[in-house]
Length: 150
Image (cartoon, helix red, strand yellow):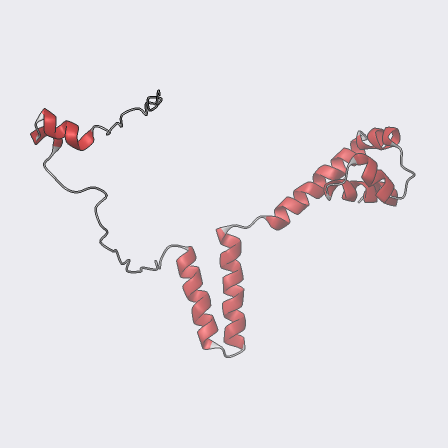
């Protein structure tokens, strides 16, 4: 912790996401972008901000080991309270976490109508059959009707 409480407040505000100017004002100083920028470059301030960010990262880091430890604590609490089913659930959750238990479910599939009518394979068709089946049909271009001359 920094000896100057305003500097400490400035660092904490920076770590919370404030701009240097916002953190400067939050620390109790009169708004001054120039002074905020200068304080931000101070070695002690930079060191403290880095330290606070590292502490925050360490606290929020979730790993398999931390989750397993929490499940062990939950199991122990459940056993102390005489709740066997909760203890079993904690054990099962830990086993799933480590991949020892895998949930399996049956999947139902539905037969759907084919997208196109089945027919002979294209390699077994004549050119005329292939063209009839695969070549897009084109319409005659619309021609204006002849004008009635009277």
